[in-house]
Structures are given as structure tokens and as C-alpha cells.
Length: 204
Length: 359
Image 1 (cartoon, chains in turn purple, green):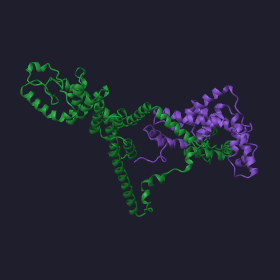
Image 2 (spheres, each protein chain N blue to C red; image 1 turned 120 degrees about the vertical axis):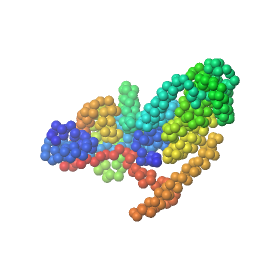
Image 3 (cartoon, chains in turn orange, brown; image 1 turned 45 degrees about the horizontal axis):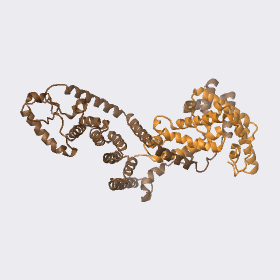
Image 4 (cartoon, chains in turn green, orange; image 1 turned 180 degrees about the horizontal axis):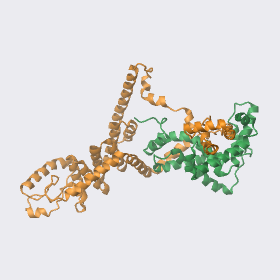
């Protein structure tokens, strides 16, 4: 008997979608829109652009659905599309200046990434929220200062939750290279976190 | 494990990509080696404290994506259809049974070629011309009479009489109008109706492999008889290889001749096949595709029956479960069909990537 959409793997859902089951596609969107949006947002840094690119990413998936082979891994395919769209976007925007993460909010406009993240802890006490917000800013700054190839590996692992082998497939470099990029990214992050008490406590 | 190996696997360890044995070995190593213990605790703390919180995507993004998908599918119907057929074919092509079936068909096909070249009488020969001298009959390529598929049954009897007559007269059977050869001999392919009728005749005689070859040939050329021929070919597949192989063909016919009677019939047959195979969801979709067509009433009735059967199955299963000594309390009747799915439904966390906890 056919299993429900909730139990099915991404690959099974994609095959069902190829056969015309649109509910399977809706389930894939529900599962992946959040991490994909975050992956794109942290690469491109502008929420409105990230929204458009995320939408475009799923649209590409629809247009190329027939090419998906059921022995392939869906997440690898999805993030390959997302990554390519990010690269295209960054190239196009190469001559334009990106708004900095530290840039204050534009009146009535979009909020910077740092502000969005600071808002994710509304229930914490004011003092703790201030420390937490400061630490989040440090994390984001550290991430922002990473070379592009290290940042994308970090995001694919942390946000996309892809294993190193799949990241190697997405980025087209050997797995060992992926791991050394990840190691550099974590070292940079560690340096940014050293000054915070939370890190010292976690070291134990 | 030594320090060098530990350095190689430490990231896999951090993200729980190591097998149990290596994990245990690495863990033991950190207990004895100060250097590696330091590296490990720094990495673990960094990952623990430096977790990136995920930002919620803008409200309405999901709807926008689904709407864009709807528009995209509308804009590319042919492509989607082709993609769907390709994927169906690819799915079935992966099955070893298909390779075996192909090999079998190849063997049968090649042996037919050998048999056809052998002189002498064969029971597949149908002679449709009468009253000619034996010498002339030998050189004849006999055109099949124009007839509609409905007339085939009536003609078949006549054909067998003719055959008996031809035998009695000693006319050589080389004047072949056999449908099998009709598919293979281009010079006899001019009359599409005749070839179609011959294919149907073969089908009626239960010679499905030959019938399918003849009908496929008609369907491939895409003439006026293509839709009916394709439908018969799919039925022939069903007769020889069963529903699993035929359902793809029915789907193809349904997609290719969507607005014809044969297309609808193929859709109907596909639904029946899915039902037979226990693919309830696919059967449901196929029946639903027939709504608002001339099969509307049939499809709705069949769907209702399908629902009845599924709920009956679920009820039976529940009863069986209740009869067991350690049976769980029965679910409400209305929920019966949902029970298996609901019990396995994933937690909301499936929507976001989970952070693995480090040891």
C-alpha cells in the first residue's frame, strides 16, 4: 500500500510528483522552504532577494522535475540549484554595494539580517537578550567575514544539514577539501565566540 | 586510533557521520590524549554555542511557490506529460523483471523471424482471395479486405472457412496475409485499416505478442487508427505480462490521445490496473481524471467502490487487531482509514534541520 506523504522520503515524494501528484510537491516545499530560504538569505543577505531566489529555486525544480533520477539524493539536487542561483545573483550584484549587516533599519524598509536574528529570542530577559544578541551578531559577523567557499560549506552543513559527501557533490570539490573548509569556518567562529561566557561554560 | 587518524575523522565525529565502531575508538582516544581532547572540546563547544538560529521565511512564501508551480505546469503541459511518461518508464525500466521480459520477447521475436522464413504451411496464414488458380495464388500479396473492427469477429469465421477451402484446393500458403508479417513487411503496410484489423484479429485469437507488434506498428505511424491500435497493444501487454507492465502503456495512451474515446478507455484501464495492483492512491487519481468526461458516472461509481473496499479492509484489520490479546483500543470508525498514516506521521521537527547532539 502507498505510504502517506508525511512518512515518505524526499526522493519518494519527488518521484510521486513526477507522476503528477501535486500534494507530494507541496510536502517537499513545506519541508525545505525554511532551510533553503535561510541558506539563500545568509549568502545574499537581503530578505526580499532571498524570498525571490527561494521561489525561483523551487520553480527550477518544477521545470526540471523530469530530469530527477530516483537514485539521486533530493537535497543534493535542491541545494545545487539554490547554490547556482546564489552564485548567479552574487555575480549580477557584483557591481552593486550590499547593505552591511550593521546598517541600521531603513524606515519602513527591510531589516538587516542581524536584526532578524536578534528577534528570535523575544522571551529572554533584557540583559540576557542583549548578550545573546551581541553573540549572535558576532556569529553572523564571523560568518560574513568568511571567504565565500568556506561560508557555503558551513551553511550547507549547518543549515542544509547535508553530509560532507553530498556537500562535495554540490560544490564539485573533493570531500577532504570540503572538510578543511569547514574546519577553517569553525575555527573562525571559535575565535568570535571566545570572548563569551557561554563558550567558556561549554568548554568545561 | 592515533592523533593523525583522529584529525581526519574529527569533523565526521562532530556531525555524527561516523560508524559506531570508529566513534567509540575516537572517543577512547580523547580520553587518553590531551591534545585531541582539547581540539574535540573546542569544536564541540563552538558548534553548541555558535548554533545559527533559522529565520522564518516570509509569510505567504509557500503559497507563492505553490501558485508559481501551478502556473508553470499550465505553461508546460506537453513537457510535463513527457516528463511524467519518461519517469514512469524509467521507474519500470529499473526493474529486473522488465529486463527478463525484454530478453524473452527478443528470443520469441528472433525465433519468429526464423520460423517465418521456412517454407510450408503455417496456421497463421489467412487467405482472403478465392477462386484463383494455384500458380497465380502463389505470387499474390493478398490485401486484407476493408473492414471495421466490429466486423472482425464475423470475418474471422469467414477467414477460417476460406483457409479450409484454400487447403482443400491445395493452394500454397505462401500467399501470406498474416498479420505478423504485415507488421514486418513494409510493402504490405499501405493499408492501415487492414493492418489494424489484422492486429485485432490476432488479439482475438489470443496471439497477443504478434498482435502487439502489429498494433504497435500502426500506433507508431500515428494515423487515424493510432489511438485504437495503441489501446489494443496495451491490452495485449496486459494479457501477456499483467497489469504492472501494462499500466505504463495505458498511461501513455491516455496521455497521448487524451481527448479521444481510446484515451479515456486507456485511462479507465489504467485505473483498474492500479486498483488490481493495490495502488489505491494512483487508482483514485486515475478515476478522478475521468470526472467530467463521458466516463464520469462510471469513474465516480468505481471510486465509491474503491473507498468502500478500503474502509472495509481497514475495518477488518481493526477487528483482527482487536481480537489479538494485546490489542490497542480501537480507533473511531470514521478515522479507520487514517490510522496507519496518523500513527506514523512525523513530528513538526521534520520541517527544520535537526542539530545533532554531540556526545
